[in-house]
Image 1 (cartoon, rainbow, N blue to C red):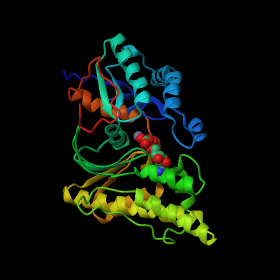
Image 2 (image 1 turned 90 degrees about the vertical axis):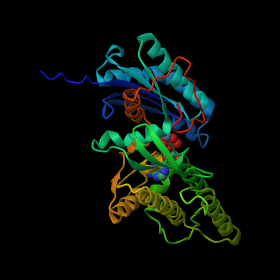
Image 3 (image 1 turned 30 degrees about the vertical axis):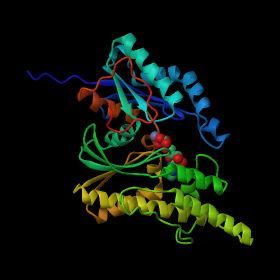
Length: 343
Ligand code: KG4
Ligand code: ZN
């Protein structure tokens, strides 16, 4: 008689920035629940994430979010095989809440504890809806805190091909949005407004770094937008916010597409994925899809709900780390500047 392999159920927790999230994931790819409590409305008042407020809100919400995730998945703590948790990078006070909670549950229930790198989570979001996707592939992680071009060599094995030298892509979106009065978070608002503008109206610079062809720099384009606005104001000229949004978005997207496609070719791979909050951007998705089609590359992307910070992606990553043997002890700590690939 064939014995069926036992399912692996993981409760995953994410609290690295302004989302308190918990999820139950089966065998790394089947999301049984995905609960996200966003603090965006609170941080909007301040034009960005206030770390101290984020930590306090995580403490208030985390138990309720976990209970909801278990209830929605129709499981109890006794059904779980492991606890996965983001332990870096991120805001230290925010990370600590998730890490302490995960350790408490794992200790109380005698469950294995698996710490996860936030970017590994974002990358693994692609496994949830693309059941056939397996490494190796190239992944572009673009979020509010990160812009990383990564070669996913195998589950849990990463080589960083390129990264931003200054602002993250999402950070640039947020700063430009603020400059044209759109408010926080700016990415989705620029995405929307750009549809009414002309992307060729203004030529903003696309930074390429000569000695590091896969690295990015977005502070130049951000400054160019601010200078353009100031220049118009000084000359008493009108400027069109939709044209600025569309032209800025094009400058950012073009660089992301160019570097990503060069990397896919250089590494001789046929699969490419995007991840992170900015991966929801409609212009970026269309441009990446087109570039992949032209280059004969298979294109993968998560749905918007798995692009933004969530715990299902941490559950997907935790599954592969768990079956690969990764275990953390009770001394697991929050590591705000954790490097991808560190254990
Ligand atoms: O991954 P994420 O939720 O959190 C971090 O780990 O940073 O990413 C948030 C970032 C913000 O900067 C937000 O403005 C940006 O993702 N973002 C977008 C879009 N949706 C969210 N940027 C451009 N276009 C979008 N549609
Ligand atoms: Zn993130």
